[in-house]
Length: 242
Image 1 (cartoon, rainbow, N blue to C red):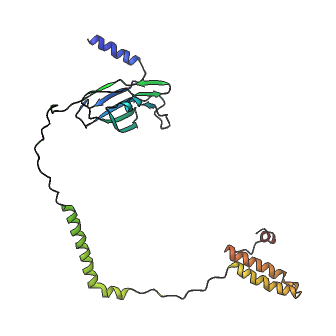
Image 2 (cartoon, helix red, strand yellow):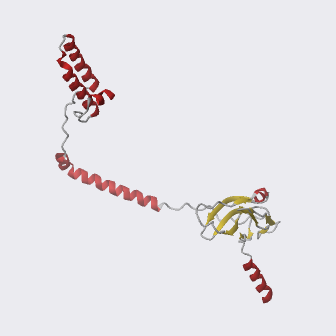
Image 3 (cartoon, rainbow, N blue to C red):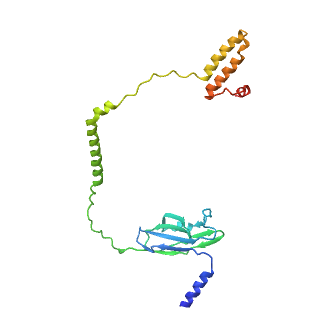
């Protein structure tokens, strides 16, 4: 016997390909209880990185099993292996077969085998007797809600008492902010520019051509109002570009 076991171990080590492991936990359930189908596949070289491609899982046969219902699926990757879990339930009695699941990775195919799941009950088929009724359960007393309510009431009552005692002192210390008259809205740069240009046009109409420097000053003032920045160093070309 030990010789056969030794040969099996040697052959398993000689074969470097990872094997797909699978099991159903627990293998026996009662109707309505949950069982977990778990598959584990060791990582291949190069799959340790986060950018590794995910293996393709084909579980169509499990979905097509009419007597089994898949409640949840869970998938994760550890430092050593891929893990898939299926949470199953059934109300059918007897021994059911959990269909195999195929996993494809980098051109290699792995497949689990059909696993048996036994569904049993402690009651006989003809046992239809009603079990004794223990009566309606009483609702638990809401101690936590009452405790929180009393705490909030105590804090509120204490704060109200303190305010009534010291409200005169607090009102004396409070100073109402001074109400300042609203300032007229600031004049927009465009309105200011139109008014100044109109004034310069009137001087040009009177053939007073000494307003060239004043026109430059007006334009600089307009850009200074609009840009909110000093513009004395701007050239005529810069003002023309703007």
